[in-house]
Length: 196
Length: 196
DNA sequence: CATGCATATTTTACGAGTAAAACACCTGCT
DNA sequence: AGCAGGTGTTTTACTCGTAAAATATGCATG
Picture (tube, rainbow over the protein chains, first blue to last red):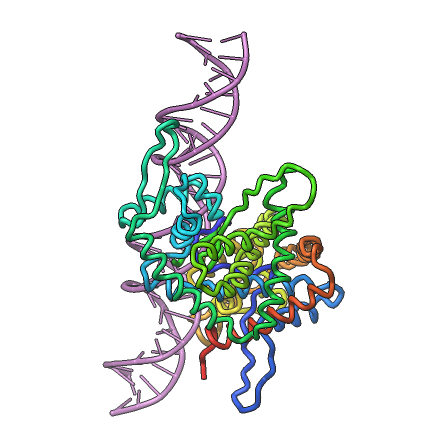
């Protein structure tokens, strides 16, 4: 699985859909779908430590739902997220980047970047120019149109995200950011850059 | 973006690769890649509230890295995660499920389930039987082999996940689970099941 | 009991990503 | 100079997922 696409799986064998059919009033207090799945696993395998599923399953499920949600404002602008990430990399660095740098910056394969660049170039959002010294490399930059598009979308995107997170209070969001940051440092150190 | 597939983007225009090249001792205290990206955005757009990116960007990035990591034990068993999720749904419910139920249970499209079932059936992990009353529906169940496979993989999977999370202490993990659960309830209520 | 609409599943056509091979070009060595 | 090997990018062949159409039933109604 390399998956191209879209719907992402949820994770760790944790993927569940609720179907508690209480038709009446009163909150079911059911918890989220991951909790339900974990409960199921525990009744079947009471001996297993399901702790990791509660974290990883939720991260994956949140990511899946968030992406669907976040796609909305982007689609509205006719962009997929990978495309927006590419444009965003150019915008936030303020530099011209080579396809290879863009691949690293957006965590995608070189081939994928090549294809995206083709599309974005055709749409006039991005522009390329060969390197004078080394004729293997290209330098990609935003066109004025592309830059305007990114700058136009970003605020919408952020306020949309803010709304999406609004169910968690400010303190909770900060705690989440910190904890996820800690986890990320570990993961990136362990999986991403074992260059030591 | 419907994406089929695999590598997921990171999110919210947040996708970055580090490249601080300190070769010497002393912790760089660089933080994670998302922090670096957020810093870049802030220098370019000092007026924007980048708070949401710190949460959503990290969730997406964690999900991306975790999936790569988690794929390892699964691949080892010759399964993709969506396949494992499907088998897992059958295992944890302990029931026969219809393709439609499996689709809901694993958050995927019916078409995707159809294809996976074809493969899993050919591999003898799963078994199908038509409904006597309603000839439109099929009932899918694990074969003994399939069941044994799931039961064999699950402990490996969990201990692998445990190791992957080991960078965060027990308390942190519980906090993460709770906060993500809160967020998930909101997201699922808002995006998933607006059936009221 | 025929008609029409709802539901369950599969099929079709297509888009996007990947891995690996192919290219094109540099660079250090002899 | 000439070549061996490395790096940057694109191409190729293929997989997998999706959306929408097609298929096959079931059910309610007149």
